[in-house]
Length: 257
Image 1 (tube, rainbow, N blue to C red):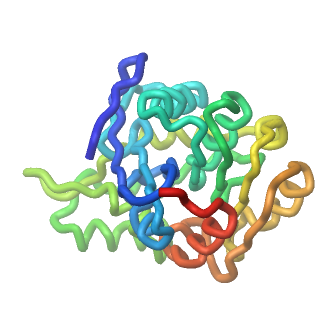
Image 2: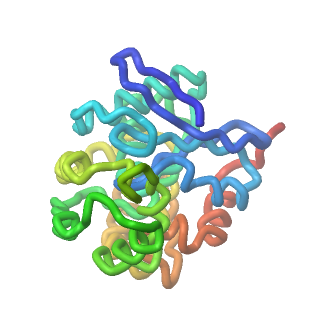
């Protein structure tokens, strides 16, 4: 892991896969972390930089999980690594951050891939967080709890943030930070979705609730392509990595070493 500190004093961790061509910036969803995109980097054969966004992974937990806070971090990170204009691949929370930054700081974003997030989102309370113990005796118990409480067959989205200390196994994120993040992403973001000029790819899971919103999103935004991955749910970047890589590779230009 490497680190960057923003002008506002937020320390952000990230992982860089290396590889040919101009880098792709990957932004994870709530509960996730940057290194979860390394399997996608391997399938793409491209350099991918996976950022741990505030409140996640090894990055700081500044207490502010507003839209402005997340976007300021992403802009500062792009500028610190001299990545602009960069292609952003974002999942869920990361997709919202990608298309909002494209609209509000267009000079920083060359194009973006939005994975399974709508242009209008309700509030998600994640009541299962109340049942989640602070520590587990083993990683296996932690993973089993996630499968049971979340009802997911893709626990890696959550367990990539697992860690072990003297008290047992826990998560790098905490429930209140996640809830604050979820409150921040609730709203109507059509203006951000439709106002940016960059080429965009929207990727949705065929079994995801976002799929029913996708046709309207495409209809209302020029220069946007849609790929629906059959049988995939929300965390398709892990469950259907090869199919996602194919969609992204088709969208992006051939890398230049």
